[in-house]
Length: 251
Length: 337
Image 1: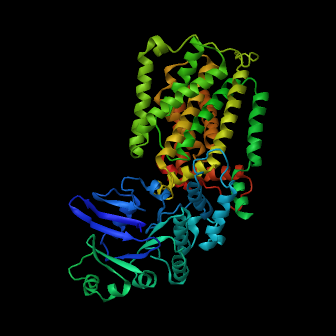
Image 2: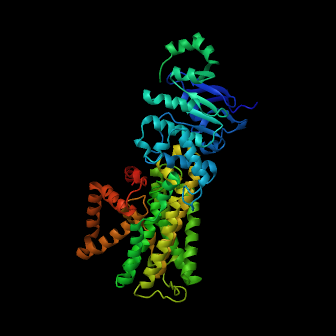
Image 3: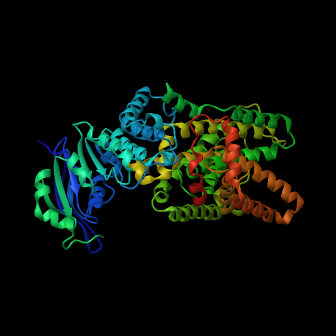
């Protein structure tokens, strides 16, 4: 079976610093894969390489078996590679309605329509309503995004990525900074993502990882350090060592 | 349905907007002696509207917007002089020339940061200005392009010295292009522009082809500027080098700042205030009108153009619906200016 997402010896160096070191990663269709690692292990750099924000120094990225290494961000999105951002990158002055409208319009191929008013396409509007319901944003649709509770903003973040109908979804620390009482709702939304979407979860919080992942890769110093099922990873003494900080520094 | 209604509320014409346009045409009917200045205001308003499309909606800064204004002016002037005096045909040709010129330069302008864009737009305008200055056999150089004769509109309305035909002509063109611009900014395309303006990286992650959209709006805006230039050439039946001058690019930026970018009426309001202020101040102290203009600008920008603009915007929007129209990036945009 063709992997949903695959990297082949992906490398990224900044000046003399190696941020990503020959990473070869395979995500099966519908995978629930977590990528963990200490601070500064290069998790976010890897997400940026996968999504096309950064060009790799060497190596390839394959989406459904097709080489997308040289494609810009938006072309990868159209081919079914969605991502969320760790730090809030939402359009603060817009409403969730407008934000979801953008993503739905691009996915439906009407984003370049400069004549008809936005929201005229009934299918697109219905899709926005569905998305809002799935991600519990119905009540928040018409508020300014920057005024929403943080947990709602994180849900919108996932909803926007999901609106592109991805086959692969990269979630960069979706629950980071979300207060306790909003957390369950968010993790629920992650847990109930459809099974035909392959999910790569980048996470710090081990609770979240072990609740969600069926497979875990450990990134240390930019390289894949260990990979396996959650119980294997939990038992791996090398992983424990890396997390306890032996010879590992932040940065 | 609630969501569909929220979208529809966005592009409905407000009563204040309709009143504004009625007022503009009443002004044409009543103020026959002020027709020449009315004509000039309409032309500058169109020019500022053009800048608003790229600066207010897409966040592209430009210090050389006169390049397209001047290109349209010379194209219309030369077309009338050598080929045909038909005004509408000339307008179309001028729009075409500005569009082609823009498409050619958009690839230079749209790479790089705001500073790069400022310099490249400025540079392109300076180059064109110098070409027009040197190519005296074609443009007349510093003497200006003489011998432009425009035929009566539809063969009926002559562009006479009262300037009433000219004012009506410019006003109608402004209204038509305004309505088109209004559709554009309320379309999915317009929404994607605002997304790009607020956060290009995020816009790309939503699936928006950032560069293509920017080239598109930049080209549309240039067409608008070209038409504005053509209107000036046709209604004054003369083209001079100052159609391409740096002052013109700077003035249009001032007008947009006065009126506030990002709501389409900012350019019109700015042109109105700018031109009337110029008229009043230069009447008071002919030599020092720029002094007064500068003073007003500094006071306006420092003490509360934002607040003033908000208040007017609220007025124009009528009673605010559940969804605030997004002039939210105001602070950001003011920074860019």
